[in-house]
Length: 480
Image (cartoon, rainbow, N blue to C red; front, side):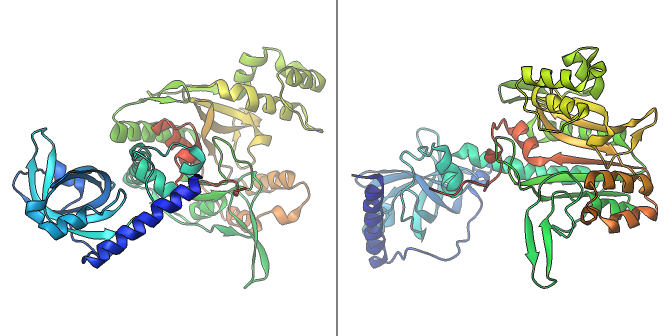
């Protein structure tokens, strides 16, 4: 028999059970149920003999002659129920035996401890709150197919407690980030997600059309240019934690819709952001996870500060030789070919060098590392280094071979900013954000700014190998 046919057979049996339950006074879909506490709270404050109301989904059930033992889960914990015929009465006990795995029930009864020393509710009354018409995976822990897990996240959360724990940790991390920044005087703000100019980063945007104004708009690729307007306006410490959208590929560390934290502090710089991110990450690790060492993608990551700092050009020389920057374009292309790094037609020496860095060097940086003093062409929104105008005062934070956060001493010279935008736009004036440039001309104080990929941070802290494991509903290819 096919899997689909088997599923239909199980569903039909559950519908028959549902109809029998309704006929005996237990309608399939009940009303709100006022519980004494969540199940984890019942465990924490357990008091034998206490009368309680509890509810949850049936995740295990053992039906015997005149007794049944059941475990329910409400997402916080599991709790055992003991149901006896002589306590419920014949009709209610017979109805209880029609319940299936996955059904959601509410119970009233007395707390006691069994001979096997398990916290249990001795059930005196029960009610059906929601009938499950489809069966849970066999043995409750049977949902292991990765594709099914991502497409049916509700079933994944029911079946795999470790998945539920990851997303609880995600909530805790995001809450604690806000607590940390609020405690340092930062103000959380919201900026537009629909923008007429996709700016603030180099990425391909999603495009849409706004009918009311008859204009094309873009889902934002970054909130940077709006947040800097707020710095100009006098909000000296701001942050935004929200979605960015980039119309690019899917892989283990990329999803087209992702969560990013952007932070700006007036009168600060890249160094301000270095201190901030080291303090924030160690605070999150110790406060939520109680440790600073994490296993991620086969590596042990130690967040103990201070983290290593190395200038971009020094790192290139470490890996490609002391004389690398004296080589010509042809030699650089030959090295790229040797390393099996694909080079696009028309790339210059700096671009070839960065492609080699991106594909072969970055991935070797396992422990937290700040890469600093990048070529200005790579970061058009950053201020130059005082001792070399060809370099910008930035860092890229690499952990586990992945970029987790870039940060800049922000460029606040409107004349230089216009020049860099023009170079980046390559003559296409529609890509120039004139409103932002005008705001800069009113004067923006020296500012430190940083973007943090929250999803990648969660991957590190929870030991997840794929970004889809820390996003509740990741983007997937259509079925078929």
